[in-house]
Length: 251
Image: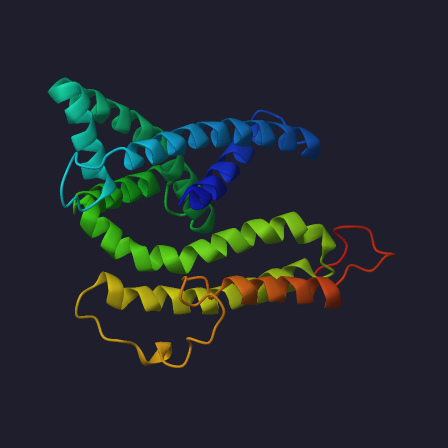
């Protein structure tokens, strides 16, 4: 999910930099790299703290349904009820920055696709929908979103990989479409595979029968090797001609 957010925030930061008159490619890269480094350090600190909390939370709470319950019980055990209010304030501030950034980026993107609908209307629409979905509870939200995330996160990772390798492809557009299509197909297999595990009583899909032979299928990474193979084949057979400058070849 952090990868999804980084794609949206990257677009938002680039737009803001261009609005301030910064259009040079190297300057944009410099500011994006700096902001990415700051974000990576902050996220690393947060996740290391969460790893430590999870590793030392044994006995704090029994039969927790999600990580939110563990964190709440841990804070109450250490600091009492006042600590819970402090935790609530921290979570609100942390989620507020993410919500503002994602609402702005998503609304700006859909406004560019459908300019007849005002930007503020997109913000209002996404804000109301997000508020409604958020109130179904964390456990239910994880259940509903898990198959979708398993389907979508390979696409986000593949897109990042392709972006770094874009200059090596002779036909970038064609390569992007091919690789993302392969990722989508095999990511869908992983996504469908999670449905019976998440939702009790869901049918075992016929699609899953006979696919156990796929490498890393049991680990939920059936998409990884096919995607890597598609990228390698694209590098081998759709190389950029030596006499063509970067950016002149399009699929």
